[in-house]
Figure 1: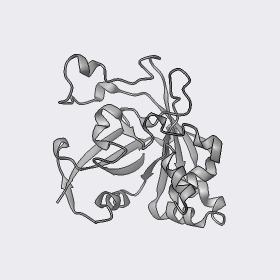
Figure 2: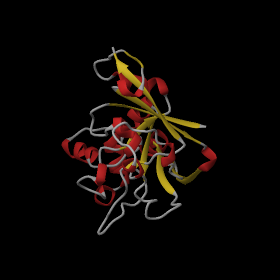
Figure 3: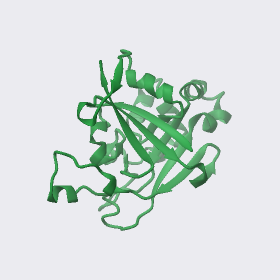
Figure 4: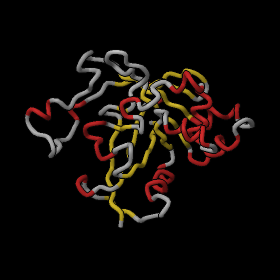
Length: 222
């Protein structure tokens, strides 16, 4: 089983505290300011800019792409959970949570190889798995559902999975910093590959919907 880990903190643009309604959200909720940066900059540039931010242009690309950074190294994810201040933390319940560890559990046999280091993974969402949220009750709970499957029942969701170090291996001399960072962090980039729906919609969705293949653990800082 391929296990990918991502740490996040409450109050960030990725709103991890809303996992029970949004799922796992990128910083480009609602597709952000640029729904299709890949057409403008190309895949290689958006990937390397996300892994190694070295100039204002790369920072802009980083801020306008839909990638979610994960790692196969749980210990590395916990380093990022501690943050730059290296705060100590302990497990807690959901109501006390200040930090979150998301874990994807993916069967490699269900991944389709697209090119070196790049895979497609398909799955079904499962909003019945959503725990009751105290902010919602009765009729409002029934409104929290997948926006795609509400219109297209039985829709098969897709993720793009990028093993960053493998993908950049043949580009290591051209992008040495990004390649080094990818190796250091055992980094994988995960991007929702479902289309945005609606009139004049463009680009991809910006969140991984609630599904059976991922879960979340809760932590508070000491």
